[in-house]
Length: 420
Figure 1 (cartoon, rainbow, N blue to C red):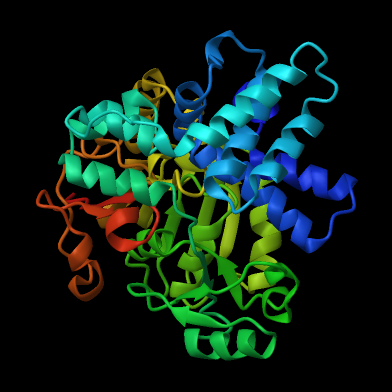
Figure 2: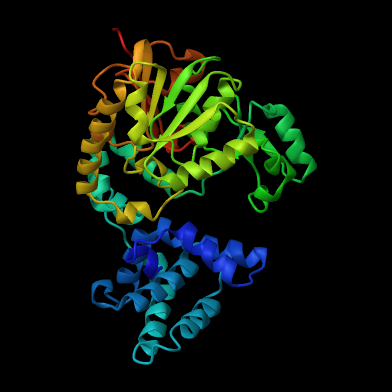
């Protein structure tokens, strides 16, 4: 936990390294993942309970001691561990903390005794209540309260602390959703179709999904439903020339290739060659033969050529807190201001690649106005499919998906057409 909260490490990478170096059963792995992500989702609430159910004051404690208290509080509040089990864990975790072992034990005993009597801020104090009870940094809650109604902010915060579903996307080049569900069922994975995307499937269990034959043969990719819809905003058609300006590891590039039925060309740009290497490997498994990867210094050679330029811009990730709960604790207001400036540069740089009557699609996985509406000053083009996208269109004409409304990750999108 220290490496994540102070060292800036990503929990998925740290857990992957841990599971490679140590021999854990699948059940033990699941429990460790639950603890790490559970604590990160509920960190604000946990800290509030620690300070109001015991005499511990987090600001004055060593981080190692604080994290022991956090682990035990999570056990006591969010799991079915018995009080004796929680105390035994506290004693074991603090065994090498000679000066603090008695303090930890007394604090955990107080937390167990008083946790249900803790009084959170009154709901009339909206920001304080939502920050403490729903475990979001106060500045983020304050920002959202300036942009949304309080009841919507509470629903959003609550949704961000829920375990997100495992959503995958059928590869249109190899299968369809119905056939994919049948293939997965034969391998022991039950599933249900997504509500909005005609390509999406929600799988009921995660363990071993990447070891399935269906995955090895390239029949699906893991992709949130909101992310699928964002790729569909491109309106990609057979034979088109499409630029994916910020392709990353290529999840949306692969989908766009599938929508184009392997015709035309997808040019995938990214700053990092390593990510483009991952994209090429994924494209090979998916059978996506019309994708070409390029470093960004080659972008200018495609000026005025693209039927569609898709910009999935780097952003604050406020729409994916439920998947990356650590990010809400490492994000600051200055980060959003810096990102907004970078996003404006990117949209200006790549807009020149759009040919006359072509499309420019700008998207993010954040719900911050500075990174979305304030970057895109045009209105959403009316080419989109109203049957799918109507429920995601804001009063200003933008695409917006929200975790608490659509049970997808939070995404923003805008489609603009070049007139000359």
